[in-house]
Image 1 (cartoon, rainbow, N blue to C red):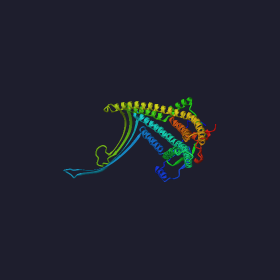
Image 2: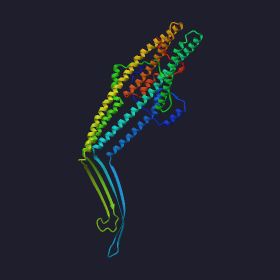
Image 3: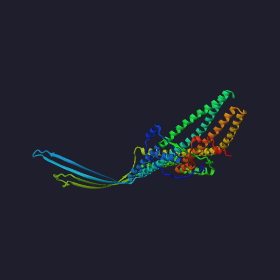
Length: 473
């Protein structure tokens, strides 16, 4: 099956909140690391990754903003009530004072409805655009996590292949050093041969230490992405065809990118939002219309009242239609409008910049993938040639016709070409994953097509560092 075949599909994801502290404690206590295949690692990352949880929470919060904004189109009802106790005394010269104590109370009900306000309409559109942007950013975060988890998985496999080849080279160097020391003791070879072998052995040991250090870093990075310790347990099958992407397929993928690349879609929505905000700002120069109905009931409860209303009760219903025409507010709306016009220019520049960057990355991934495809063909021939050369020089060295320097050089070339071959295989897949993300097509279905071409890893000690399937002529 060809790894270069890309699918366009969507896949639902799940998420759950888990404590990063628990993960750190598990790692620090050295708890067992669970082996997992590629799909399992990506699925766990989508469930547990905190960045995705944060993005989904932010999207949910933005959706409430739309509900809040929608309230501007609905009527508002206000009710108010009051009560007062009145205690008064009228002082007289010719008679006794009049004392009057009573309670008055009332209630007011007002129903208000906005009939026409362009600002509310455009503000609602801006809020909807915000939700669209956050939805795209959430999906972008999801694809980013898939890419990070899958990339870390294959970085581990690449590192493991490098360790396997370097360990085999070190074992060969140690065995050769032991043999040289024995021959020197027996007087069969000159003592100077030992130093070249020792130097190569130490260089190889140093490289192996660095690779093992890198492996710990990769596993820590993978654990941080999936929020739990996991160890890749599946590897690419040896029968995979790493083919180049044809020109026709490149044009097809390029077209997909301009319609599905999440970075471009977000930039386009930012342009739409800036235009929506400009319309909202321009609406401040347009009259608005509002209607209201108010009912008031007031009861003075004054038993001594001698004038109208003689019962102390007043009822009133008021119908109001308000036309608000903006005239002048110191120029603030005008300059805000000009500011938003400039902001449209900025978002359009950002959109063009995003297009240029996306195209640059797309081309780079295509170049890398096709280069790795060609390199794997060349490296196959190089490994076969270096292997044959190494075997021949090894035999010639035993016969005394080739020096130890020739043998060490041949061995270094062989293992070096093996490491280059293994790196090219995994880098091909990593760039393929990154290409899928660039065109907005990285999902569980895409990862699943790669996982189908992977098999459980065997015991490292039983695996040959030399790709034996390449030795078949």
